[in-house]
Image 1 (cartoon, helix red, strand yellow):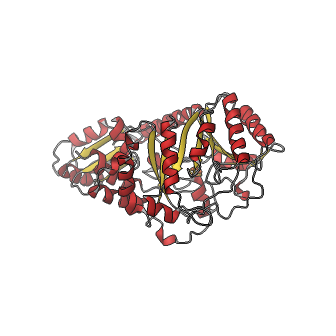
Image 2 (cartoon, protein in one colour; image 1 turned 180 degrees about the vertical axis):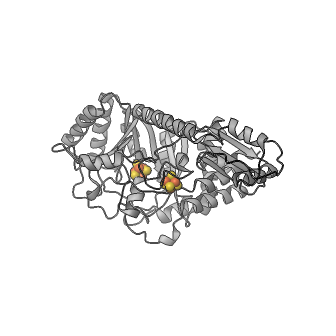
Image 3 (tube, protein in one colour; image 1 turned 60 degrees about the vertical axis):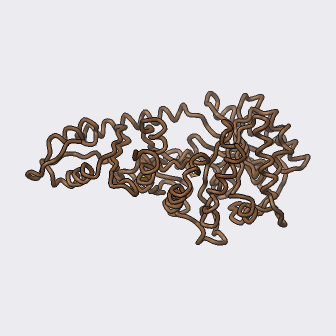
Length: 452
Ligand code: SF4
Ligand code: SF4
């Protein structure tokens, strides 16, 4: 960026409303990102200070203005609107070709009694899914999502319960998925994985998602068997068995203030066990949050930004955590790994667009966050077909162009309006905001991945 000289107040220029500009955490440098035009830059302290003044309109510098125009940080309002419309249409087109994730819940029952389970208040009136429900599910998705790329995710409760009848149900689900040529993910607590390996090997398994909340002592305090009893060692053996049998594992840690300090310990455990060297192994970290009812200990919960601040702090002392888990820090990880920004995100919530959920009672729901909540049902696929079209439309139409409050937000193309379910829990409206701390996350992400 050129050096600036202070002159008369500038003629008015149109700074793109999609510029995200801030200081990199722990550094004197700044960043500027614009997801509409796909540009991102790191600025020295001097350049950043001058740009701050320029953004306030207190500096007139034709050379800087020219450079900002060339990169689309300044552009005529009409051009910006035109580009926004074009990119929005591209987004809708791409989404229509996107793969759809179809969750199926064969039961809500579980053999664990995790301290923070949001499903512990669900009624579990019936343990077993009849074949006719599974058949109805495959008939429904075969018609409704004909011609769409799709895959199935088996979810619970705990779908891999160690009983003969449950094993039979999972075997049948995999058989039907094979017939339909569909890959399957399984979300499990991992306790009975070893007992399921032979059954899982009959399916086109894309991934097994297993949760470990820390090393043995920490995990066992949070995720124990109903009636008590540790689960860590058995889950670890299950993960080993999956990897040994070429079943990809996605290890998830659910984090709050109670266990975050064990992230370095869990990372070290996975590294020492050579999991992190296995191309079939990946990880994710989920924030424990109040989904449906009050947590026993809500003070333990992180806000979105405080979780990532805690991870950022841990990374300073334990950089090897990155071998185990690389936080996204909004779009920073993507930018660092790909050398370019992702496409603008006009909608961060896939519910009723590229995600649907179905359960063994025959009900249809928008997504995993809403599945099993009677008042969130959108209709039934069994025993008969029924659909609440106006409620489905409400979910389908939700994006940053339809949410009041998002239209003037500079973060919209990174945030996408957040989660419809969280928004609805907060305001009663699906079509309302669930704000993401994009700027603060980018401050941390640029510091972690890009400020070199
Ligand atoms: S949800 Fe909030 S942060 Fe996200 S785009 Fe809308 S107004 Fe902006
Ligand atoms: S409502 Fe929330 S949890 Fe459900 S699909 Fe949307 S973003 Fe995901």
